[in-house]
Image (cartoon, one colour):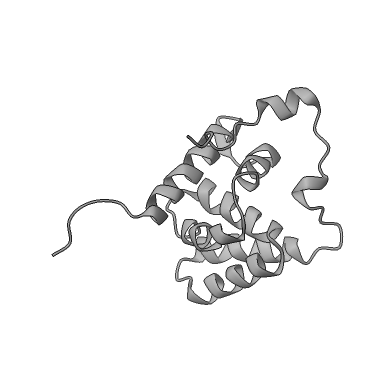
Length: 134
C-alpha cells in the first residue's frame, strides 16, 4: 500500500521550481526564462541533479521546461546526454522542440557557459537562488 507523501526527488524538484519562479522574467505581459533565471537555477544544481532536471522537461509549465533544458546544456556532456535521452522518449511536440532548441544551442560555436556572463553587482544581488541550508 502506498501512503501519500513526497519523495526527496519531488522535494528537490519543488525547490528548483521555486528558484525558477523567483527568477522568471516578464516582458510584454508574458512570463519567460531569461539569463537570470538560468544563472539562478544553475547556481543551485550539480550533476547529481540531472535526473531531477530531466524530469522537469516533462513539466506542463513551458517556463520550467525551458529553464531545465537551458541548465542541462550547461552541465556539459552528461547534461547533453540526458537531453538526448529525453528527446528520444518525448511524446509531446512542444517538449521535443524545447529539447531540440537546447541541443542546437549546445552545439553552437558561439555558445557561452553561464558562468562566463559578467553580471554587475546589482544584477548579482537581484538573483534569488536556493534557500540556505539549515
